[in-house]
Length: 213
Image (cartoon, rainbow, N blue to C red):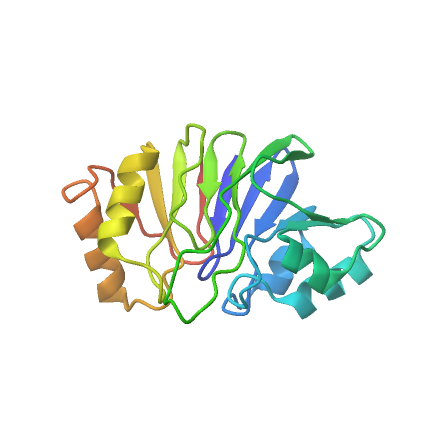
């Protein structure tokens, strides 16, 4: 499987010619291009930096084979499109071509008592790579590569460290990083990484970088 890092929370995963895009939001400049090449789009929750509703709706209208998976709020925003939009919750599973996907987690991490926490699901693909959305929910399955959110109003370095320890991945790739400066990203990676609190190197990938998992 190959992973391409896009800006902020968006990634493309490709296996045997099948492409899945996760969380193409409004902070991702090439989201339309990524979705245009995808066989399926997976949305963790309905916040704008993870879900560009107009973009995804336009892609569904233009491409009859495209499928979208997300929370009930995402499905409600898009409509059914003849069954091509599916609401998923923790415990669900589905396939996209050769990719096996399982769904984990239920709620967005808390920001403040005055701000409601929407539903948020994470996706584990082929038991290999996990995208948690905006959550530190630990999947009930082994994870080889964890995509770790590192910036945002809900993130905390101490909780991020405990999250990596609890998941126990072999590899960690930083995502959801746009609210950190370059220095902030490097400092976070060092604080959490191989010589820091988790003992696992935190990889920083420039948008557009593709790596093999």
